[in-house]
Image 1 (cartoon, rainbow, N blue to C red):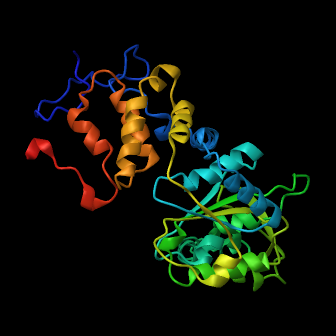
Image 2: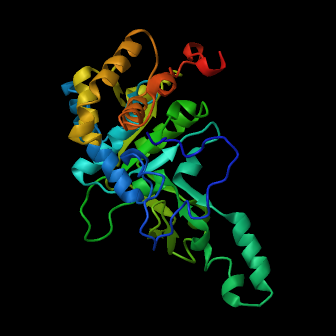
Image 3: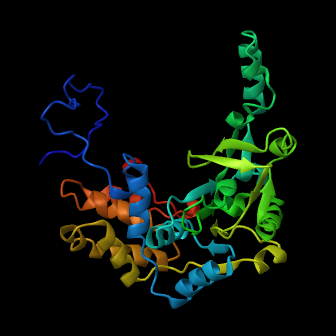
Length: 344
């Protein structure tokens, strides 16, 4: 039986023709990636993520999503890592045709300004110094080219009003892992969500001299800002995800609708597997689904993509699952890591 291992750890390099060139009619030793790890087309990947996401059969979740759309309120989605919190945003964008999801991944250093826009003051100064030697009046003009150094962030882009002639539909804004943020960010977000508008001070200061400024958006488009002011005509569909690692201020929670992602059921997992694999694989997946559910019942913290990874690899037919399966289905709780039998 052929080995599935590309890397064998024997120190012997592969021949020069191991990796085929595009013009060669030769099979690539590395098979196609799982659908959820195919980065060759980012737009198609995002659409696939929305299409394959399976919402648990829970009318409460569907109702709360629709309530957030109607009320123009942020949706706070809480749950364990890998429970599908982020994918919910892609599912809504896909089903309602709301375009590309604007994703803002939160860190401890994230600020409200970062989400709204970025002004590259250093880059502008450098260009002025370098090109000013040519004595080009356009370069030396402190106002004319300012838009080249301003890029709207995901939050700022989501607040942009539709262009003339475009449908008045909301953008989808995913603020991922808000529980990682600085203590002040939730309150700062609350203010912008309540006001529904924001200013760009660098443009506001020059509004009398330059009323219209073209800037780049987070999704790489060009939009015109008038008088340094961005009004929100259509409030975005905002999904904030949290792993439940911190408490949020009551004022913040009061203005959000909250969803708690539950532990997956067998029916839910079967639907997810069917969405990602063809029928030949689905028929082999049942023992892995059962073991996954048993591990969760025993207190292990597992993500759904761990199940998908396990099914993808171990239904290949050429892989010995004895040692690999325990590591693929390893608990996210480090205290429950499996022992490495090969080094035991």
